[in-house]
Image 1 (cartoon, rainbow, N blue to C red):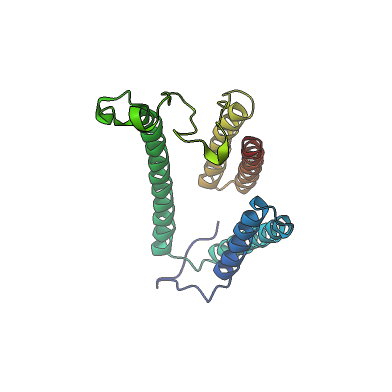
Image 2 (image 1 turned 135 degrees about the vertical axis):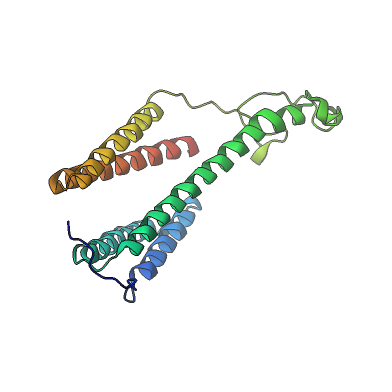
Length: 216
């Protein structure tokens, strides 16, 4: 691997990849919204947005890799990269903490309150929503869209179990790639990263299929 030689803090040149990333992500999300609303242009916009995003990722990562190979980064830039990754991981932890916290509140606290089976409800909900029972999953005390809303919980086996296995496997492959990086074994690094990326795409595809099935 190339070693860093610059003493001064490296200031990158004007990069156009963030702009392309914003355009691609916006196109992808607008296309997704149009697809949900039944617009015929939605799927095409999603494809265009996905192509822009993939091109941006390859281009941006390639630029950073080439700059690193040329030795234009110093130790301070290396710390910046590590801090950026730490903040990203921290944001993911906070996101899932909020997500599961909201799920806990909805499932364990709010549903019993609405059913009037909790002391905090003070019996008022028994008069507001008669016949509503404390059950999960639930459509709430009112009928959404004029339907009773009978839901069926998604089983833990099948795609959910497969995606869990894929996530665990991707952790193993990226660790193997990291060992290759530490040992200056470039073939091992490349193979490990390729395997991790393929597992990541497989996870996203299975997850998209699962969400589509649950939505439809």
